[in-house]
Image 1 (cartoon, rainbow, N blue to C red):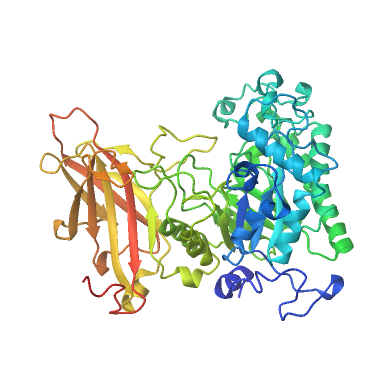
Image 2 (image 1 turned 90 degrees about the vertical axis):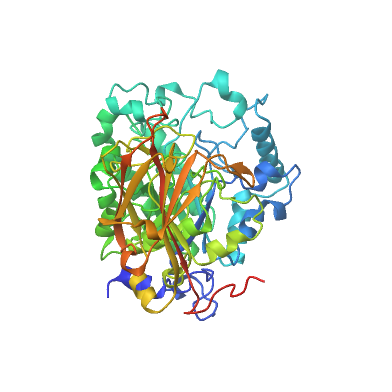
Length: 574
């Protein structure tokens, strides 16, 4: 059995065991430890938003500072990834090689950033290093601790933005910036990948970043580092496009040097030091276009794991393209972790992904071959911070594909956030995304991937219901007519319930956009298959009196399970 298949079958051995303790509970040190315990479920915290740094009034105590770590203890998370620095090069700990947030600011122009800097400098002045506090607390509570920082940093106009404190003096050096780029692709770069980003072609830029990661590996008893090749989870080249082919070997050599540092630190500290890399969930041609020699990093080997994020923004992506990373890591010790960003939903009742949507994303990731799953957005607080409770039930199952198999899920087709008009970034999706207009007689087909083995669970009597839902905009029944098909099977009116979404006042919102919800309760013979499914919507007749476009706004599949056949959760309603 291949290593990845084995891990998916039995899970990661002793995933939440502290590196100081062996799997059987015996205390071990240094060379006594030979079992490689590997992360399975990670949680990324940007150190600011859902964190005391922004939300607590100064002064702060060490106990205050580690509240974010304490929140994930025994939650199902085994790895805490903490952002050590900002996109502008300043850091959020007591670094000896980097400039701390606010160190170069006299007068502030942002109240919250000012508070964050005050908290940071106060805790350091009191004799506590935030990095050490996080490190110690994670290990005390049996969590892997992996700090991260952007490998590419960006500058800003000092005169205009100095009062934010987010850029270091080094980043303000204009001679080190990428500058304008006449490549046509440059116009699609995200907000932080503008001309002000520092050019990795310069040795000084590479060395400045190297010192930060070297410090995180050697000065602290971390369990490694994550090299964040994104800026705010967006991706772009660290130089002009025309120089990418020359930059690529420089980046590989830079990672190779860090690998040497990590191995030496591992011997010195008697602690495993992993190198994880945050990359786009894409294909080798995309990686190469950015100067990321991912295949070399895996084969040499220079990295221990790839944390893969969606390039489909701004939208909730439950189906990461993991085919290439699974292929290149096959037969190696390099792990594939799927990162989920839950910020982008923006619907009437829910702004962020629901637990059922996150479970669906995890199920798809494992079905595509991932070794682990985690929350990769900078702030995960769907119901506020600190978490009120539902979040723990969501996280608890994310490392267990077998437990996820029969949990309720909602799978969604790719759909833009409500306030967005088009995809952003270098790599927009090539498939149909929603909302999408309908024309009479012209079928619209969207892909919907599900990871559930519905035939198996139906045979065991565990399926409660499977529903396919299509949200139609500017659509009134009786005046318009559509036909919906799933995998070439036309869905009959007999299994359809229609939901009126014309100005419905619901809790905390008004349902929108206006239209109808076509809710099909699917019989077993029409259940979605495991893998890709095709939903086709055809407008047969439209109301000529309404001069607004008829659109397919959302398509989803809701699956709910019984714990056991005939075992209804609420058998009586009175």
